[in-house]
Length: 437
Image: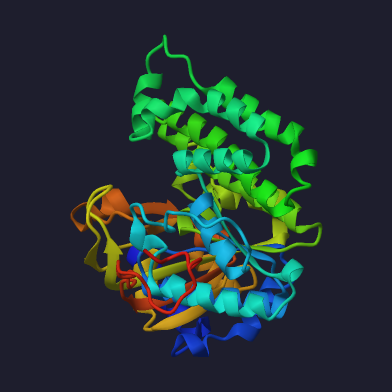
C-alpha cells in the first residue's frame, strides 16, 4: 500500500475505534484498568521530557493504579539520590536532612515542574493516611548522579560504620579528581595506560553487601538506599569509562542499570509487589520494535518484556503539535519551543488525520483491523531534553512498529510545555520538602 494511502486508512480506522475523551478528568479509566489487569509492572512513557499533558496523564493513571490496583512504588527516569529526597518526603521518613535540593541540575524542568509537584503532594497525602509499612515509594532509576551517590554512601557509613567509611573513601579516591567533570574521566580512560577505578569501586560494593546483616540492624531502609547508591557508583563508573567507545554500549549500560534497579526494588518491596515506571517512550517501548534493535541497542522495556512477558504493560504517548520545554544544547537554557507538524508517513500524521483530539488506543487488546494497519514500521517522533526543529528528521524521528512497541497508546493532538518550578523558597511546606531552595 502506498504510504499516503496507508496513512489515510489508519486515520479513518482511528476515527472509528479510538476511545476519545474531552479532558484528563474524563479519561476512561475503567477500561484501561481492566486492560492492565494483573500486570506486575506498568511502564508509562512520554514522547518528550517537557510536555504537560504527558506528565499530567501519567500522574492520573498512576493515581488510579495506586488507589485501585494497589501498586507499591513509582520509579522514574531520574537519579536515585534526588528521587530519594522525594521518597523521604512522600513516605514521611525520618532521615538526616540534605543540604541539596532535588533535581537541581540540568535538565531541571524535567522533574522540577508543577505537574510533578502536584503528584508528589498528592502521594504524600495518600501515604499519611496509611500505616508506614504500606506507603507507596518514589525512586530513581538513572545513573548520572555518580558523585552525589558517592557522597551518600560515605555519609551513611560515617553515621553507622566509620571504619568502613574510611575504606570506602580510600576506594573512591581515584574518582575524586574528576568530580567537577565526570566526562573527563571518560576521556582519560581512553588512554591505554589508564588504570580504571573499577576494582576499587567493586570492592566497596562487595564490602557493603558482606556487612549488610550488621548494617541492617540500624535501619533496613537506609541500608537499601546506601546499597543502591553504591550500585549506582559502580554502574556510573563503567558508563563514563566506556561512553566514548560505543553509543550503543553506553545506552545499553544505562538501561541495564535502570532495569537492575527496578528488579532490586521489586525484590525489596516483596514477592507480590507491583511497580510503576515513568520514563521516555524510547526507554519503555520495546526496543526490538524500533531502529534501536537493528543497531544492537536495547532498553528497559525490552529487558522487562523478556523477564515479565504479559505481566508488563507499557503505555506510550504522542502529539501532533503545540509547545514543549526543551534546550537547544546539553546544559543550555530551558526554552518553550514550538513543535513542528509531523512528517509524512509518521504515526503522528496518521493520528492527526483522524480528527480525534484526545484518545486512548488499546494495542494489546485492540481492534484487529487497526492493529494490522499500524503494524508496519513507520516514523515516530521522540523529543528528549533537547529539541532541534531545524534538524527534525535526523534528530527526532526513528522507525517503529507501534503495536509491537506498546500495549496502549495515548494521543493528544495539541499539547503545551510543562511549567517549571520557580527558584525561590516555597512557603508553607516542611523543611524536608524536596523542591525547596
